[in-house]
Length: 180
Picture: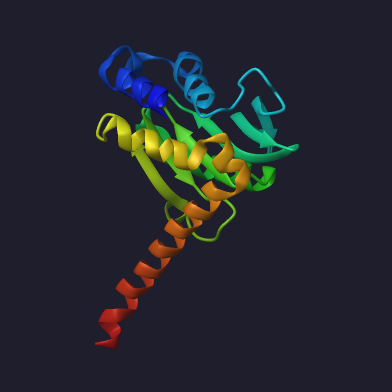
């Protein structure tokens, strides 16, 4: 985790990271982070690039035992994420990926595609590298994307707990005023 935190600090302080196009972001940021989270970017059975699902492609499918676990799509600008989230979720449902991520390397939107609700409801966590501490970013990436956490199902359980808590809070917020 120390190396991941050091890399996050570098990404936070180096303005070149914001100027990268999608290809450079994949190479310099995404694959680096995945390798620091114990994924082997050179093993296509583990980190499969350009994975086809649902009539389209995702940039990376993180896989274990021939099953999709996490889909990652890299876009240049986080302002465009909302335009791409429904497509990503469709691909993830088709490919049976438990977690789906939209990222530009610095902003990470994390979704639970197989659960009900709108895209906004399925979004369980957002990382903003430029606004959060390197330690916090590192901790969340480790929690939701580390190979061991994904394979063991821990990442999914923690994400589902966040989702369920949010759903409960929305119900309370909606129904409590009516009860009064």
